[in-house]
Amino acid sequence: MTLSLSSFILALSVVLMLLKNNKTFKQFLANKLQKSFSKLNRHIPISSNFHLSQSKYFEKSVGLVEVYDALLQLQEYGVRAFRQNAVLFHRASSLNSIHLEQLRKLNYFEKLEGINEAVNANQKTINSIIEFTLTQLLNRNPIDNVDGRELLSACNGLGYDYQENGTLKRRVTHTKTLSPKSNQSRVNEAISHVCRDWHPSYGQERKPLVDFITARLKSSRFQGRTLVVVPGSGAGGIAHEVALAFPEFDVHSVELSTLMYLCNEFALGYDQQVSIKPFAQHFSGQLDTGNQVRDYRIDLSKVKRPSNLHVHLGDFCEFKPCEEYDQIIVASAYFIDTAENLFSYFDAIENLKSSCSELQWINVGPLKYGTQPKVQLNDKELTKLRKERKWKDLYHKCDPKDLNGYLTDEKSLYQGFYGLVKFHSTYKERK
Image: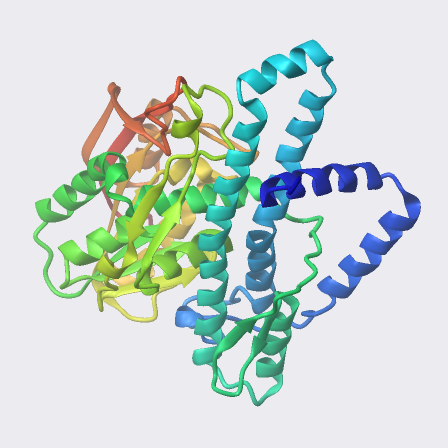
């Protein structure tokens, strides 16, 4: 009897789970982890377009170490997902023989194998993100210096060899070590955002946001040079659409999450079709397995990077334009409620006034606070705060019946929708 690949992986994952309490095995893993994480210890800054240099838009740039860590987390996706499914397999296998027979009649274990196949499909796309990122880094930087050698070390740590013809070759055998810092929920979120930001089906979630931002931009008759800054840009779909709609404006996308940033750059530069099954690991609320593993195909060859779009990896609160503008507009979507300190967002936006004659802020998004916020303001309080800080609303609306989906699976029993706080304000500098 031959085992399928997914069955073998399930069995192997169960064995690994049993080994996890073995002291010798744990020491072996610790040694492997130490060896893996010692590959990159020196801060090498990364600026726009994967150049290993200090960004002129931030006082301190994110470094190659952060990119390497993000790529490690992406590479771990499949292994960690298989382990999670192995736990489900192990729990079900502990049932008595009568219940096991009933599960077999339901094809329950075949479902778990099907989920593993969906995970494999996602890992293929993730591997493309990893290889695209490494290729961009190698193509845009010299490798015959200290930074270049660090870059080659990163490639090696991820299981890739640099060939004499300038290409990457993935090693057939590569031992993956799991990082204790890995956050697979963030990996899943980033991969899902590729669908939300770039798949046509998710246009119904993007369109109300883009329509509001573009309508407000068109409502003002700007003269001279205009900069639109999109903070917390995610996988970059909204910033891309704004840049296409206003080719006469400079549009700068700023994203703090390295995972999101890499997905954004991948979408803008990959130029091929990719496949993602975003709900593969969503077991709750499913009607059937087919819906759970359904495929979203995204033709990235249709995505072109506008010449006026600039994508940055960094903290928006530290972003500073390098040029003077007649007007700067901050266009934020699903951003305010991500703040640990909402006042730091206000400060960062208001600091942009030093680079322009006129500063405006267009916002659309919910108030679903996370990340251990220091303050959690309601819409009324937020409106009063803008007035207190010398913002004048040109438009403000908050309708709880005007709902917007966010990574919503409309074929499941649970669907999440948010009411949106919409405002467009202009800033009168405080004395």
